[in-house]
Amino acid sequence: MQIHNISQQNSILNNFISEIRSVTIQKDSMRFRRNIERIGEILGYEMSKTLHYQASSIETPLGISPINLINDDIVLCSILRAGVPLHNGLLNYFDKAENAFISAYRHHLHNPESFEIIVEYLACPNLDNKTLILADPMLATGQSMVATFEALKPFGTPKEIHLVSIIGAKEGVDYVSAHFNASTHLWIAAIDEKLNEKGYIIPGLGDAGDLAFGEKLQR
Ligand SMILES: O=P(O)(O)OC[C@H]1O[C@H](OP(=O)(O)OP(=O)(O)O)[C@H](O)[C@@H]1O
Ligand SMILES: O=c1cc[nH]c(=O)[nH]1
Ligand SMILES: [Mg+2]
Image (cartoon, rainbow, N blue to C red; front, side, top):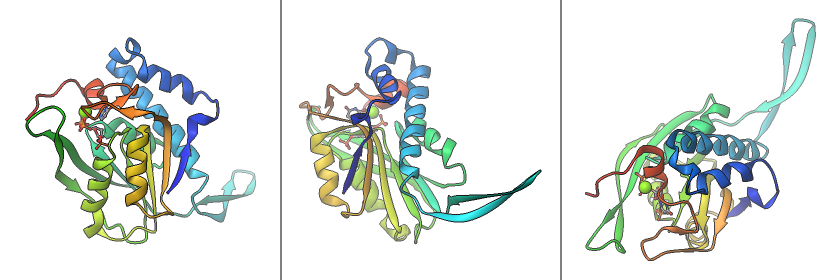
């Protein structure tokens, strides 16, 4: 897997990352969602540099302007719930993309430390020869990303896969690296050191789904 850790280079991305991590600023859920969206726009922009382009020309009122335009058929798939604002950010830029949504959530078994990933809802177009972007802001154990990839297999074989995440744990990055092809790209804004005993990223930011949309009752 090709890992692109975008915050290794200083940019305004750092300011948005610091705001979603900040225990005080993240309490403003509208700002939290908007920051996730802005980060999605930045990661999408960085990713766009590796897409395929075709020479084109555009008629302006005063002449003809040559320009290379993206030539890929993009399918943007995000994992509910926390993936929604990241999806919106990516879709702001890849506005012609087809869209897929999947639900993957942690179902806690007997105690907070043990859980399984439940995939229930899935809506997806044909993926054959498309460029698949899989988006989820948190890459903790990596199990949701891998379960999503497995669930999408019956929908076709993409030509390229780009994983987009905001904060990952080293363990989760290693887990997805082992499950995805070496040609898969991972676009990520930060890789944190570890997971705690409940599978939360440390230092991370807490629960992204709850911060964006409010606490949910455990089922
Ligand atoms: O890498 P993993 O260990 O699989 O964890 C990451 C998953 O956890 C979060 O979702 P969560 O289960 O909290 O659901 P939510 O988005 O509905 O809050 C996050 O959005 C990922 O989907
Ligand atoms: O740290 C984590 C891990 C999984 N999901 C989250 O929202 N945060
Ligand atoms: Mg959550």
